Image 1 (cartoon, rainbow, N blue to C red):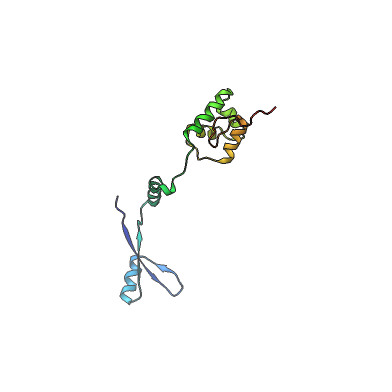
Image 2: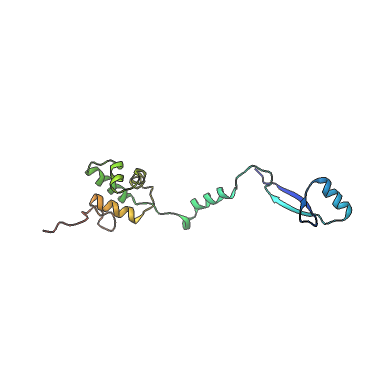
Length: 143
């Protein structure tokens, strides 16, 4: 749809009030008073800002604004370790004091990595989830 410009004419009075009725504007023009004309972009349209749509599109296209997601190896390791302990996503979430949706996002690869959450998962699952040795036991048994 095309955007429309609307001209708005107003006349000022000595008390600072403005009038924009056609009768008042015509009267002011006949008397030689100053009439201010301003253009309002997309006036009288019941629309939200179309800039929001463009911004969202730009976010998707621009690499600079791109957020990193968890890697496939991390998400698989979390799921594998959880299943080895025979825990549901909800049980794991309860143990690390997070919402079940957080675990779901990490296991599906949709989550933006948060080092605190990854640290909680490492301690709870007993498996390294960061670095080169992903999947190795967190603490080696020394006796």
